[in-house]
Image 1 (cartoon, one colour):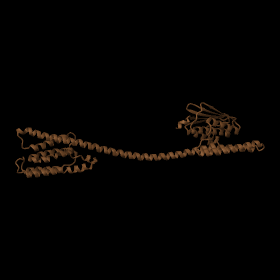
Image 2 (spheres, helix red, strand yellow):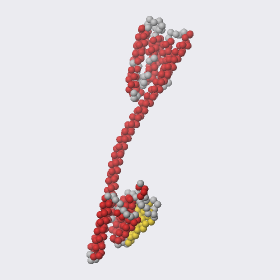
Image 3 (cartoon, one colour):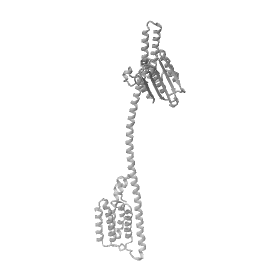
Image 4 (cartoon, one colour):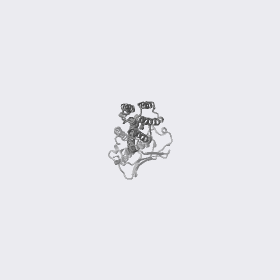
Length: 419
């Protein structure tokens, strides 16, 4: 059967295209063969026929009709009706043209649409059946005539229906192939886009890691080196003022040496991203108590550390942040507050841990520009950034002459939760 050109354009099987091109020549071959048989059987009385001149005239018109038609949808039905009429004319001139009439089934699929194809196939079956029984038009044989025509109609209609179903399968397969190709194209584009996005994410993650490491090192340098150097300078100045008191001078010098050793050790641990030394062999409350006692002894300021709640080991990052925050708060008290008393409270709640550092020093105005209240301007900012990195909060309350309170709240993530 001929197949619509749109189907041929999308069908994946190239052999179907070549076969269809060859089938287009079949009507001409069948018409020529029928004409040759009609000429050879001109002296046979058994073949119903008209004079050859009439047959030749009908053949000429048929060839012209086949050559003149165009592949335009609106003219295809007219072409098929004219072809049926010419088939009937040729069969009337000679019954052997029934062989050509069979080629009408080739045009049914192409020229008609929907149920009209089945009607067209039935019409062609009538023509072929008539060619087979022409010359037997007597009442005694009408039953045979009816059976022969009916068989041709049934066979032709069944073949057409099978061709319709087959073509539908090819069309659906071609559509599926197109959809798969489109999906593959979209998938390839998506993969390329994802690859580019992945590359950007990797770059951003690398840059974020570098920035986070820089911030960590900056905080560690401030918390360890700056605080240590500040303490050393303070002790050396005190030693210089105690020149007439050898015992006090030696004590301040020894303290400065110890601060230098501790600072060097902590600097090395910071570069290697290790936990602060006080947390190595002690719990967080014990490490804070050690820091508070050492700070109080160095600066001569009364300080106490209070712990409430059930103590539990936390993630190293959380404990290190709380320890560094306490160290920074105490360093700020020593540098700026002039306090006489400091209280540090560590509270273990159900899902939070809080750290409060309060002093009775001179205080400051939190709304004032940072440069007016900090030398170097990094202490409070570093403290707050360090706490925010572990999803915590850091609030600072202070008034001139009323002391300062630093309140830190971080999530209480147990050490076992890291697994």
